[in-house]
Image (cartoon, rainbow, N blue to C red):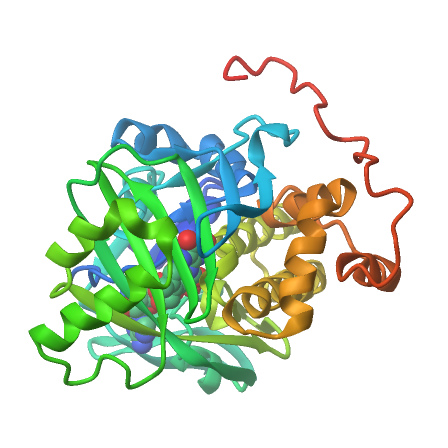
Length: 422
Ligand SMILES: Cc1cc2nc3c(=O)[nH]c(=O)nc-3n(C[C@H](O)[C@H](O)[C@H](O)COP(=O)(O)OP(=O)(O)OC[C@H]3O[C@@H](n4cnc5c(N)ncnc54)[C@H](O)[C@@H]3O)c2cc1C
């Protein structure tokens, strides 16, 4: 490629989504990633309907479905015995694709890569060393083989973003006190097609099906809980997990067989004070990250990319002043939305990962309140933020009775014109 218009640093979901969205505007986009091949990490497997609408337009959803992606019709918070405490029934959403879609992160990256328009090039094994500056604005990137000038730089280099720091954009990060042990279970018998989070005395257990009779299971663990543990200790640990969560009984043989192959992942939340500086935009986890419990991270990254392309298209050219104006609009539009998603994800995580009275009460109270439950689902689905008032919070923990608890929001069951799938 001759000089690109846009350089994207990072070929995770955020970077590839940005490349797709900007490439579809006719921009020449160069994506650089330091890894020669994507790392096989168990993260980012569940897509929300809001993202599916965007990915459908880009031709990604069809590729994922063809590759066996699994549709999940509900997100359910359950007690340890498996009984439902809060059910989000995605079929009720006013969406063309009213379900969650699950596939491996690497398959989602592959589908995005396949859908990249002409004019986008991905180079792997190329670390970006820092921004290239001109007249006080970012005007490209520095790599080992030389400088690459660009009219717009997109930092999609993940939660520890080097570009964000080098561009002077600070981010506040808080680690959760627990980790998630990820297991990929094979040969699992028929399982309900839902995303189920179990609230147990030992914390969160989260499971959902993946293609090929596989199941992803996340188990909340203390930072050192599995460190240095031998095979016997591991088996005893698995027995304790299964004893403490009868709802996981159908997974017991597969879990015992798959104990050796685990990943223990730290979880944190973070947000940059601003998502832009002259010449550069942050997308995905370089700008914000949330607890995985509510399956929002990848979806927010896709929404970032979509919004960034929208403001660039409205600007009409990539002249420096026009780009910087567009970037400020991107920052305005996204930060408001992200603050809300961040709060929702954090609250969902607290409800399920801690043993606080208020958390358990809020979960059960939301489950019993049709109105609030549906508004929470709308926000989580990525179809649009539905704000809860301070009064709603009191209704959630049932400190005040809600006279409108049974009243469904007007959008429920609104027909989606021309949607053959419903
Ligand atoms: C356990 C877990 C489960 C999750 N589940 C879900 C889920 O179900 N749904 C959901 O929506 N989200 C989920 N998430 C969140 C989701 O994984 C992230 O939000 C998403 O992967 C972030 O994508 P990204 O592209 O911003 O970052 P990354 O995926 O981290 O990609 C960053 C890329 O930048 C590259 N890079 C870094 N530095 C440089 C450099 N200097 N030069 C060049 N390249 C560089 C890296 O190699 C990498 O490829 C989960 C996260 C975790 C931890």
